Length: 327
Ligand code: ADP
Ligand code: MG
Image 1: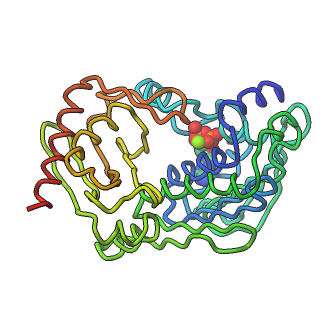
Image 2: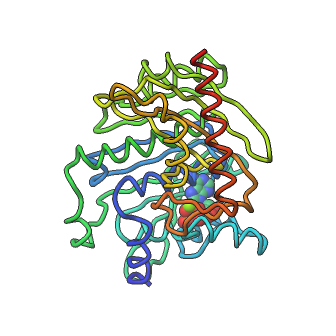
């Protein structure tokens, strides 16, 4: 069991940032509106994610740490949708096999919080009472302590933390309705309150993408042919000496995709003078049955069933938006 989990871990847990991603996604799935992330030594020493979500009932704690134990599949359709997102029901079990993981949780309906962890070769879960407010904390220490080959691939704390920060940034851009706090070695790195009003959204955007982008970016919100595009774009806020702001989300998930990149580059073409680069934070929504997300969750690729149509639509909308700004 332990070996199978460790092999699965190779797929899910590439580095501390992938652990953070899985944990935050679980918190969001649990309906959390407040997520606090504590990192020590680039995640090598500790990764702790606390949320105020629905929690896990005492009876389900052990199960949550078992492989292929997901509470998120109830019909065959769900199963298909979930497979298309990648490895499901494996994240916690995988992480638990390559670290020291403690899961503490309290659903609102339960009086007492409970804590679970696994140990030994058979991965049997132990549980005991604990103190915890409504919600869940996953505390992971000594990542890869028992898989030296993986540990060796970790970069410096600074680099690993950089990847974590980037991951948090992407997720925070896609969920303005959730507050995020990120600390590294006890130092507050990001403090992002819930941003529901336009002004608050603007502030979060400035914190994540820089004030230049936030000031110059134009809002876009268009819907036609079953596609919906919204977000911000700036024709000239980027230049080569500034970190690029190029974020594109498809149905809520960040993508780096050739087809999308091509459409955007073409749309921006006439404006890309003087070292300028396209800058945008855009969210495309389309019916789920029209896209396949690559089975590997880390690849950020997407396959559109009507690729040409999506490409041309996007090109047209963004170009139109840019022309409107120029006038
Ligand atoms: P998956 O997310 O694919 O279902 P995971 O291994 O990531 O698989 O999590 C296993 C299960 O543990 C989830 O299905 C969910 O029921 C529970 N779980 C994990 N994290 C949380 C959380 N933060 N809040 C509530 N439940 C959680
Ligand atoms: Mg998960």
